[in-house]
Length: 171
Image (cartoon, rainbow, N blue to C red):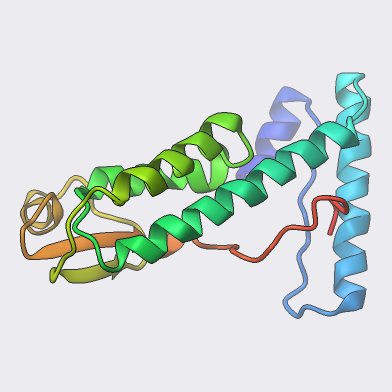
């Protein structure tokens, strides 16, 4: 395992979350326990305490971002909105790495405002499953701002769309 190897080589802490296959109350409590262990490990390694109120603020922004994201997607099904394989691939950042940031919330808010200005569309809409071949020239011809086809998303950035209970950050 690469992470275990790197942790040992650089003498840094390592923690792997064990997520049960089936979801139930017991599995939820099991994961919550692991998250609390992980937080304690990080606090010990950094000498800093997790500020749960700040975490709740981040989760609240994530929730607001998801609301804007859903509004944008609802409009996207009927609008002709310019997109490329690369720009859709970069949406992974807003949906994962940058989620909860003020800038990401503003980004989705701006998308909702911007898409209203685009025309209705009869284009064939395509939702990509798995990794996008953003580097492949022949597919770029089909998907990059094509007048007949429109890429509307990728499954990799839709792993969670339910409402977030930001007052219970470990759940």
